[in-house]
Amino acid sequence: MPQREPSETRILTVASEHLRKFGLKRFTVVAVAEEAGMTHANVYRYFPSRVALIDAVVDVWLKATERRLADIADGPDPADDKLERLILALAKANRDLLQEDPHLFAALSLAVAKRHAISRRNRTRVRALFERVVDEGIATGVFEPRDRDRAIAFVIDATNRFIHPASLALEADVPQASVDTRLATLIRVILRVLGSGIVKKSGD
Image (cartoon, rainbow, N blue to C red):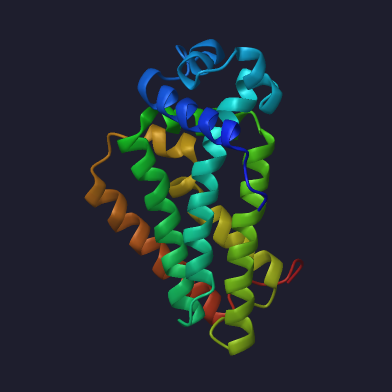
C-alpha cells in the first residue's frame, strides 16, 4: 500500500474527527481544511469532492476491518472454525460501529446504498476471504458441497441480514442476546450444510 503524504494523512485525521463529532449533515470541507491548517483548495488536491473525502474516511475503517478478517483467514485453524470466526468478526465489527460510532456508520450505510467504489471493493475483498476459507475446507474435506459457487453464495446470502448496514439499522433496538442467539444458530446451519453436501449443483 503506497504511503500517504503528511498533508493527506492530516486531512484524513481531521476529517475523521469531524465526521464522528458532527455527522454527515454538518461535515464540510471548509471546516476540515481550517482545522488542518490549509486552504480548502489544498484539500481538493487530494480529495476531489466532499463525498470523496467522506468515502476515504470510511475506507480507512473498512481496510482495518479487512485486515482483521484476513488474519483469521490466514490462521492455522480448521476451515470450519475460521468460517465461523469470519462471520462473527464481520458481524461484530459492523454492529459495534453502529453502536459506538453512529455517524461513521451512517457514512458507511450511504456508501453501501449508493454502491460507491469503496463499498464495491470492500465487498469483493471480503467475499474473496470467504471463498478462500470455503476452498480450504473443500480441499481438506471439512466441507463437501456439490457446487462450490452455490455454497459460497449460500454463505453470503445467509449472513447478509447480520452484516448489511441496512439490516443492522432496522434491528438496532433488538436485544443483543437475541441477535447473538440467532446468529449462532445460523452459523451451525451453515456449517452443517457445507459439511453434508446439501448444496447441490444447478439443475439437480
